[in-house]
Image (cartoon, rainbow, N blue to C red; front, side):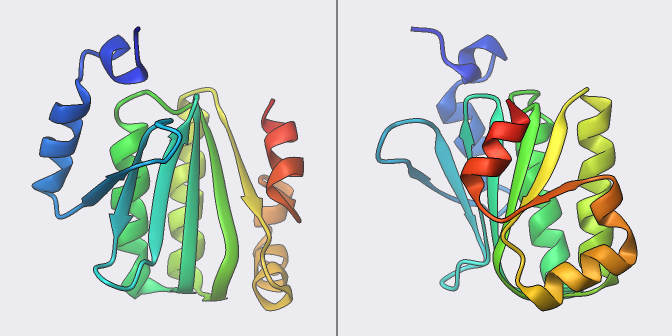
Length: 155
């Protein structure tokens, strides 16, 4: 059975070893749909897993300069393999976002555009949504209330 890893000439073992050296921790998903990268030590702040060609990322806490590097590293480790064409960022557990968080999202938007893919944001609380709207991100990236609607948009 060909997996996304074998199609890109990287075994699951090689992927884990390469990224473990960067400080990632890994666990296999229960349905064996992919690898989940855990970043942020005991307090999980950024998690990601691949479902088909869609990278599902969940961010928790304050999405500010202390979290942006973890976010970039996590997302880019998947995007750089070419296995993800679509990106869903779940912001439902984000309590605050500043310009560095907005910049990190915009950086991934540019990267996904280069892959001819799409990016969506899911579930931001009212304060976070207001900042996304004031920044204008809502004009270039779709914002959805739930994952089901967002996944339908991605195709």
